[in-house]
Image (cartoon, rainbow, N blue to C red; front, top):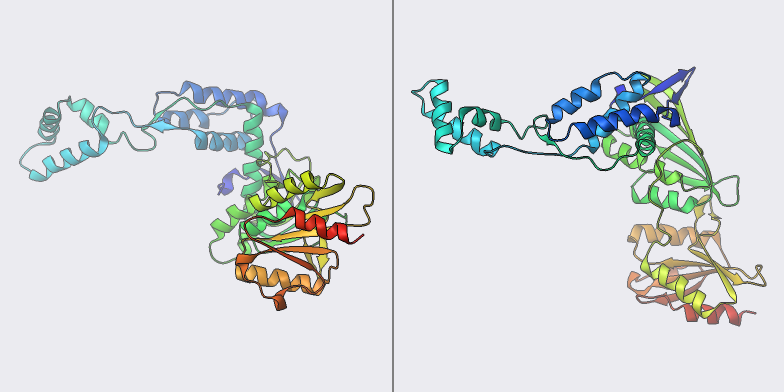
Length: 383
């Protein structure tokens, strides 16, 4: 978690405004990157000292944040003629035998190892973090470093949140799925837009155990938000001992995550490919707008309809590998929602009884692969 001293913010009343890095900061960020390049083959402690030095034109709080990030990127190696553990063991064993002065112990041990006393002493602690030698850093770009620093700042703030609210539009399923996979305590309701959602999440400071792990999980949601069409995140956070309101929104310069996976499983990916091949006159939409299922949003895997008649629309949900508890809750909500145009594809290995299934849904069971041909036959027969 980012140290509290590195939470670069401007306080305005009850709000804490993150002081994000911008294009104007790139010149001095380049200076810090060059310091990393010059530190190659030198002890890491020297790099740390150089990154602590002030730079003309660089705001001190921002410089410290970037320096912290660059040190996290830094790689190093142990370089000593005698492996440090071997040197320490030999020297301490010689000292334990007693009867000699310090210089005699060092000289005798060095002779036994075939090195000079100075080399032996240099080898003793060569594996300490500050004594390891810096190796050439990976290629770094000032713009990239700035965006990553901004992401670290946003995640550091959320790691100290009591509560978080997110309103988003577009690609809501990816965010909700990511939150669920990370084990976040999350309630999801419909947003103002047809493809929008409103998320209420508990923050780590509202939980009394494992706050560090939860804070990291919450922070991991931030880069995924960059893939939505629009979002606004509001969090109540402890910032330097003050309870403050922090807002993140679309357009904030935050490093995005890798593009979210288009499919949750190979089964879904194969079904989409097979459906497009077998029914070119039909449209298949991945992750259509969510359905309100008794106060809980249901995100269907697919929507299908004839290209010439969008009103004849069916929702397709592939139920594969889920825990029994999750599956039970999901089926119960679908039963109560009474979605009449739902095709539920159930993995036979889930061992779901007929009484557990929604009465209004069409159920097709599959083994290893959803038969797109059966789905097509069913929807074509209902003309």
